[in-house]
Structure formats: structure tokens, C-alpha cells
Image (cartoon, rainbow over the protein chains, first blue to last red):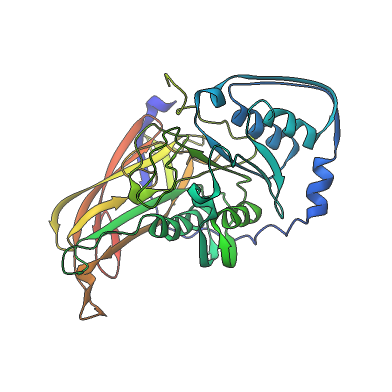
Length: 258
Length: 111
């Protein structure tokens, strides 16, 4: 059928009225999901990150994963449990990787490793004074947050004399089915802001993929990658994150040979 | 919003076609644009997870510009255009449309 694609008709129009953001989930709701007991559960995945996204998708757990793209983290995961809670499943997956731990945020499960990426090197700990989006798509919200954090993480170099010459233009596609979201935050970390975005949107998983290289950005942050390609990410675009829906297939482009 | 159609103009109602874009300046470049931020990062690469919905549709969230030429003495001014070609990739196919960036608006294929 793809062979028949020949024409893309362009029709600018506004979508229908924006759907309201999801009602706030409460910690009790998350705890209830995490406490659900499952029996005879088995899982095989190409990496522990893929395993985590699959468990998160299957049991509808909002999750944020900050991982280092190290060879050990790209090992296949095979898990089989007779009886366990969903939280125990997540913990079992995480235990396949030394140094990683599970923690509970306000509405999101976090998986990270302070031994792999100390807090001072993680852009997730950067604070923003204000982050607001009103009735925007998740893609716009994510880009606005990215604009805030990349300026903080890698301040732009002004030309001699300090003038603002040149310029930047751009575009941003998105899925027309995504609900519009509103987020209003002040004095929060980037991790808090990502939690708020996935709390409000249909994307329920955020993933920050840190480079295995120990060479830091000029501001002292660990460099990040996207799951989607192996292109080097310039400092001016650092840091990056990927937002997934529950059930999205995890891209494995960052794996060797892909 | 964009609708993916076949060569006879019939909608291809298929979800999951990867969508991304590349933008390159043509001429003139009256706004002095020196770089682009496109759907995927780094710019002009893809795909990165944006797909058509079950109707074969996707949307342009925004076409934007930020240029020093649009501010004179700390005041906004009009100016432009900077013309560019936007190559839109859908699955393994691509089309090109013309974008014109002005300080106060952006047009695609003259609209």
C-alpha cells in the first residue's frame, strides 16, 4: 500500500476542541496498581529498559527511566516469577542491572542510578523557575521544556558584541489524536516537569538515555542520546528525552549494530 | 492537519506511518536564518516516533521562527521572507513543500 503513496494533500484546519487533561491520579491509585499480584509471569526482552516499558505498559504504570547506554544495560532480560506484585516485577527487572534502583515519585515510578550518573551530572536535577503550557499538545509541551532546559544546560554563545543576529526557524509534527494538555509548575526539577507531562498526557513513559561516554558537557552534565538514532547530539540540543505511550515498541537504534 | 492520500487522491487510512521532516533554506534568506529545529532531534533527521493516526492523518503543531532581524531597537518589526523547502517524510516516501518564514507569520505553499 505504501507504494501507492503519491500525494499528501495539505489542508490546514484546527482540530476539534481540545480534550481536557487527564484527571489527576493519586498516589493511592499508583500504589494500588503496584500492589496488584500477578502469577506465573514471564518476560523476555532485548534490554532491561525494554523489559521495564513492557511491564509498565502491561500494568499501566507511569514510569520514568534514566539509564546509561552501557553494554551491560543492553543485555537481554529473561524473567519468570510464580507470584509477585507489579512493584516486585519492576524491582526484579531493575535488579538485573547493578547500581539501579526503583523509587516512587508523586505519580510516577522512577528507575535511575546515582552510581552511574551522580545527581550533579544529571540534567534531570536542573531546576526551572516556571514551566507552563496551556492547551498544547504533548509534543509542544515537551519542546517548550526542552527549550528551557537546553538553555540552562548549554547557554547559547552570543556573537562578539553581544548582538542577536541570525535566527532559527522550525517545525513540529505530531499525532492529531493526542489530547491537549495543561501544566503549570514553578521551582521544579526537569524530572518533576517530565513527570507532570506524562501525568497529564497520553504518553506515560519518559526515558532519558545517557551516553556511556564519561566526557561531560561544558556545564558538567552527562550527555544524552535519543532511542531513535545514533546521531551525535550537539551540546546546544542537550539534554534529550523520549516520551512513549504504554504499549509503544521500544526503538533499539542505540543498540550496537542497529 | 495533513491527510496521507494515494495517487488518485483517496485517503490511505493507515496508522503508524512514521512522519518526520527536513527543512533547508532556499532563497531569499531575508531573516538571516542560520539553523532549523525540526520534528526530530538532531534537526533534519528522523524518524523519531511521530506517526499517522488510524485515519492516516498527522498534524503540524507549529511552524515558528525567531530571528534577530525581527527586532529593531528592541521593538518587533516586520520582515522576511526566508524561503525554505520542507521535505515531509511519510513511511518511505517524501514530498516537498515551500515554506516562507516572515516575522509575523509563516506560509506553506503560499497559504
